[in-house]
Amino acid sequence: MALSKHINADRLVQDSHDKKSKHHKLTGIDSNTIHHSYGARYGTQPLPKYHFSSKGIDAESAYQLIHDELALDGSPVLNLASFVHTWMPAQADKLMQENMTKNLIDTDEYPATQHIHTRCISILADLWHAPSAKQAIGTATTGSSEAIQLGGLAMKRIWQEKRKAAGKSIHEPGPNIVMGANAQVALEKFARYFEVECRLVPISVESKYHLDPKKAMEYVDENTIGVFVILGSTYTGHYEPVKEMSDLLDEYEAKTGYSVPIHVDGASGGFFAPFATPQLEWDFKLPRVVSINTSGHKFGLVYVGVGWVVWRDQAHLPKDLIFELHYLGSVEYSFSLNFSRPAAPIIAQYFNLIHLGFEGYRNVALDDLRNARLLSRALENSGYYTVLSDIHRKHSSAGATIKDVVGIDDDVTDYEAGLPVVSFRFSDDFKKSYPEIQQKWIQTLLRARGWIVPNYELAPDLQQIEILRVVVRENMTEVLVDRLVSDLMEITEQLTTADSPMHALNDLGHGHSSSSKTEHTHGRLEKGAGSTSSGTYAKQC
Image (cartoon, rainbow, N blue to C red):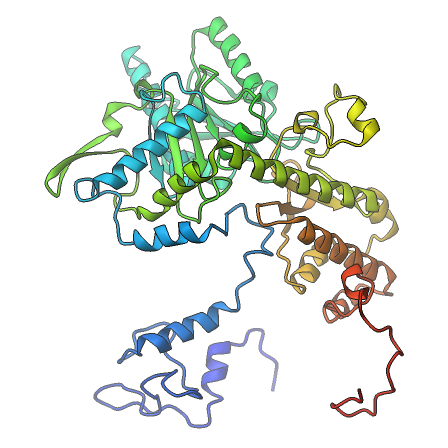
């Protein structure tokens, strides 16, 4: 029999049962299917995957079935690919559990929840130096993706109103928006979904893999509704220079009369930069910045499901984007893409704001950066890897100080500002010595040990460069950094010592069996310390 190019696994399992399924002609019920797949301790008949079963199963069985299947997921603690936060205190868990049934849109039914939502907006507006926290306007969103759509829509509508007032067409040649080629897909979604020409500014090594403001000005014209500036590139964690972009747009307006606003995509940096580097100029202190978004479920330290968008004042959120709703006995005002929205994540955000305060958020941010610098230096010192992110590099102006002499910890301001992200690749010397080793093998071999570290190409114009990326979140402790470095070094060295590319598959079976790790050598007997095995499973003691 010829081998098939593709085997349907579901059909393969179905045809391999002891008994073939026979269905009742009238009811269509499989006579060989038991009522509850977990009804008995050793039940083996599966439930249908892609259509309704004729009968349900009890709640405990349903829980166990789903619980066991989800065991195949990776560990959130070892998921170093994601920016999304994965831990909160027990008290926050309790608050979310108590309020999980509340719908944020039901303002008349849940007035206290609305007060909490409003307080969060005011706190963020104050954190981002809005001219008046009381006058700023904003809303919770599902995440930064929705928030970006709203920020972009407001800029587009204001541009349209200005064009109409000047007697100019809003269709020919139509609006455009400028952003770096490193922009996260949500920014491009806005342009595509809302019919705005997307002008991607090429990135380069010289521009630190993100938007080059001077280059961006070549893409700005009278039809530019705004510039998306990213406070924390997802590729390398670099902050794009909001202040420099703002200054250039000020000069452009002085020369041409065209005012081009900035929306700051602070999905990650909006909840990080104010605490780690409060001296950085990027927010509403700059009049050119009209709106900012952030993700509460990233460095806002809340579980997934909450984002925020804030405008510097009501003048920058056009009234025709705000809907007056007469709903459930009250008058409500809505300017979000979603209608119903769970209130629990907003309550969890408020919990963090009052529980941590500025000092708590700052301590978390500084600890994240400290561990990210540790990982960055370890990788570069190995000689195997080159680190593309810069948070471990000191400013050119930060020379040797008394702190360096006496060994006191450096101040965060001595280093390049950025997110606690470590992006790295094989060093040029390593690639020259071992051209046959593919960097993507590192991702696979790390995954075999539980670590989730993605390997992928940089943005267009630099897509020939592959990077591995680690996001250092609150739960990435120094102990985990030590273990990750140990695993990386062991995997890399195993690849260099084997005799062919096929050794990548062989190394998958090594796991943590090697005794080269520091953790595994303490308190263990060395090889040969015991009696020789007789070959049976029950080895001699």
